[in-house]
Image 1 (tube, helix red, strand yellow):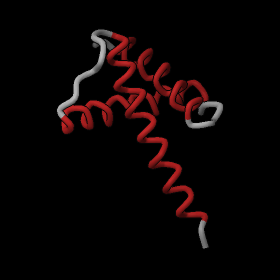
Image 2 (cartoon, one colour; image 1 turned 90 degrees about the vertical axis):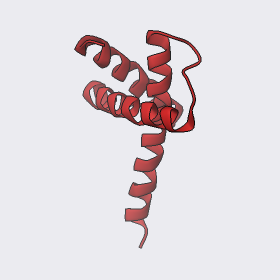
Image 3 (cartoon, one colour; image 1 turned 135 degrees about the vertical axis):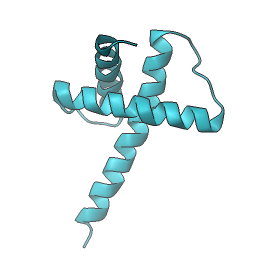
Length: 86
């Protein structure tokens, strides 16, 4: 994938994951970063579990990045909640 495709996948996956997790997003750059990190996490997770994307191409990349971004946001929220507890 070229850089523009990574940015598009990151933006779409990050925005969708933010909306699903009950937020309004982290801004365009934050959503791109969340989506790209989510793609890395999702790719690692899917490889470890022996899963494949349900569809091929760009839609499959967005799906895997979306799942990874949700995992990332759950981890971030757990860490933030742990820091706020007395």
